[in-house]
Length: 517
Image 1 (cartoon, rainbow, N blue to C red):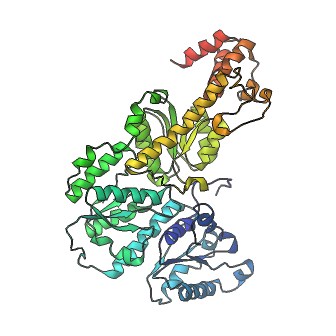
Image 2 (image 1 turned 90 degrees about the vertical axis):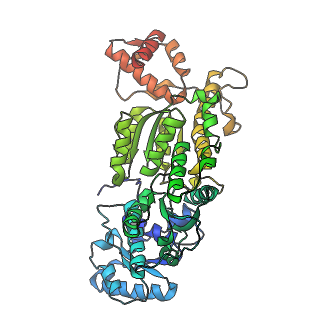
Image 3 (image 1 turned 120 degrees about the horizontal axis):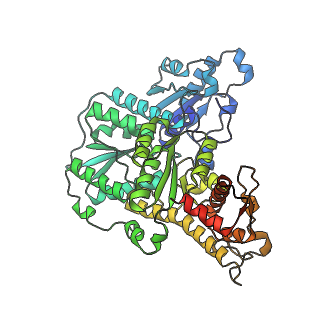
């Protein structure tokens, strides 16, 4: 294992906890020491849920290790059932408890509890959170439906209906995505049968086979379950994630074919402002912007298509921490003639972003920190995220309204960067000098001399003897701040390679022409 200050995914028991927290009458008994009981704070502190997760810990201590920790498991299971009266029990262990090998799942199965028990064997030292969430959801659905046995479809109405699979606790904008897809399906005459795991009950899971088809909104959580339902109950599965205009239209076409409904009125209508904005005069500033994208596979794949096809960005880097979907991301990168980055090491991601020198970063909360450090604009598109990325307002990522939200959230940091660049260009103006902060940051009483850019702070890593002429320094300051560091680095490299000791304006432009070929 690697000691780190940041992790894109938590341990496996956090993934199982996400499923238990998402549902209404499922309880999770976790065999864990006191130190592993921190995870439930994620849901109240970050996602701002109004109740604690449905989790009970055995919370064994060091002094318990010399006694009967297995007895502690059975006692905790019995107390949890009697107190919470769930309709299904998940039973698992944390990474620390895994070393003790008490096998809490097997102990629970031998207790003859009057509700379905789902023992979870989640290898904490080889897998992580999203994989565990997927496995937990799959085993829960399979246990409930297998116990129910084969039944006749209960649906009597002729209105087609679908299940929405994958929304879960700590997901990125799941609440609003579900509402947007509900509206989209209703507009073409398709009902929603069950949404799971978010908000679902055990009784809801029993009704999953009643739907005509399934929609996998978040493959990291629901693809395994969707494939099993496809095989077991012959339910077709839609895996197109409706993010962006192109994917949303593809999604609607698939729904129309499976549900046998006319969707032409949706396909022919102007449902989103994104295409118009992308063709507008203002957007010419955005064309060709160098973008890197990193996050979970679902949002990275969707974001890359939107960036390239709908906003005319130049995608220079794509990557994911979702190793289970590495093949899909590598295939996408190959189509863009670039190499994908598959890693969960944030330091490797930081080096990658720095080397690519993008003008916009699309990523997780960590990429926001990386971009701020490098002086580049950033928009958050994927979990893991900060509390500010769970907005109180309606902010979906999917459907036509989601396309509007995406356009706003991606363009805003670029426009703020443009505003700051214009301010630096007009720094001698009495209204726009360096003592005046950018308008979106409020008023400032800063000493103007404090804000003058010192290019020595942009020194490249190589300790070179290259000197800058004063007029070249002034010219460098005119370059937009978010690419200034890369321009300085390239110019110094050009000077070193050509034996130039003093960089003049001519050297600066020669280097620009050299690297622009």
